[in-house]
Length: 344
Image (tube, rainbow, N blue to C red; front, top):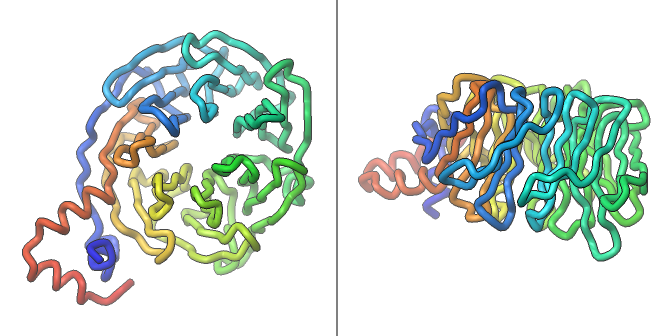
């Protein structure tokens, strides 16, 4: 009830908040482009233009190491935190032992790699590598195990982002204008959420960020068209188009329970959305000095991480929980006034 009252009348003016970071890390010397957050510990990894990998917990830098000969654009963590993968503009993918940052496997690709995702099951130990198509490579010897192609990949479009479902049964991929859901057992495309020239029907530009809800019912996508969209995974139905960002949306992340969605963009805002209602919950002004390239939700659900072109890594309290606290402290008359505003 408290959350519903807070959102009613939501326009951005009523939802804006000044959020103070819990920690600000300045160890990177240039733009930070990638961030990978653990799903079961307080570890996260960052990388970017300085070609170094940094491993943090919420309080401090734990380890750093030069990793590539060119800009690092992509990171991925295995679900058990034992493996880290990185990809750079040198067209090289490296799989590292997380604890020691020792390289275990190196892949040389013919073109830039824009997305990575581990697939570790009782029968497969692999790494998805996305560029103009999606390749699944063995973690044991680098052998190509499978190639995934949907209609969009068939046209040679880049796979900008990937997300694996909690059950590991589904792989969500974002390409030019749309999304594809693959079955990780058959590697066949199950559903395609295609882009459109009509913004009412789908994205009108490339999808840069995507995520699957923990219950695997919903997929979300953030795009160069400045929108975030919520889709039903079962049949690809577009449920909500979330507007408010004023620049390219680079990253999206679900809350631990799947109720809320977070997005970051060129406008340097961190936005929280209610995915069921299809509305903004709050807009946090981060005061990053550059485009926010990636965001992630820590396993405790109370903390988020953002990385930016300003070379900073910032750790934040969950803005939704913060907004709920602020709302609870308002006098009853103010809460009633907010609850009776017109819904936008």
